[in-house]
Length: 195
Image (cartoon, rainbow, N blue to C red; front, side):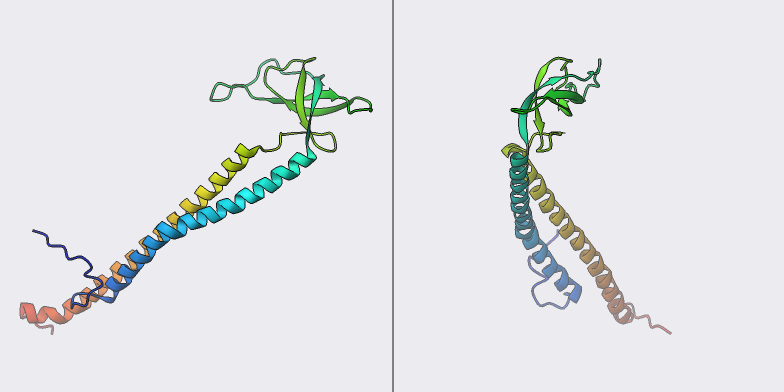
C-alpha cells in the first residue's frame, strides 16, 4: 500500500532535502506563472498587436481607395487551383480614369476568372499603384488573437521548459545528497567498514 503525505516538502522532517524545498517553491512559481503570467503576457501582447493593427489599417484606409477599372492586359488561360478548391487571384494590367484626368494603366490583382475587357473593382494607393485592400476589423481581430495566443503559448512553453530544467537539476542534487548520506550511513546498517 502506498501512503501519500501531502505537503511533505513544506514540513520539517529529516528526509526533506534542500532540493525538495527548491522543487516545491519552483512548482508554486510555475503554477502562478502558468495560471496568471502566461495569460497576462498573451493579453498584453494581444492588446499591443490590436492597437498596432488598427493604426496600420487606419493609415492604409487613408492612403488606399477603391476604383472601377477595365482589364486590358492578357489574362492566363488556366490558373493553379488552391488546396481548398479555390482558384488564385492574379496580377494583370488594368485601365482606370481618375476624375477629370486622362486614363492610366497599372498592374492590379483581380479575382480568378476575370477576362480581358471585364470591369472590376481594384484597390490603388495614392500613387495609383495596385495594392491589396486595407485590413478590415475581422483581419485586425484575427491578428490580435494570433499574436496574443502565440505569446501566451510561448510564455507557457518557456515556463514549462524552465521547470523541467530546475527539476532535473534538483533531482541530480537530491541523488547526490542521498549518495553522500548513504556513504556515511551504510557502514552502520551493513556492519561493513570501508578500509
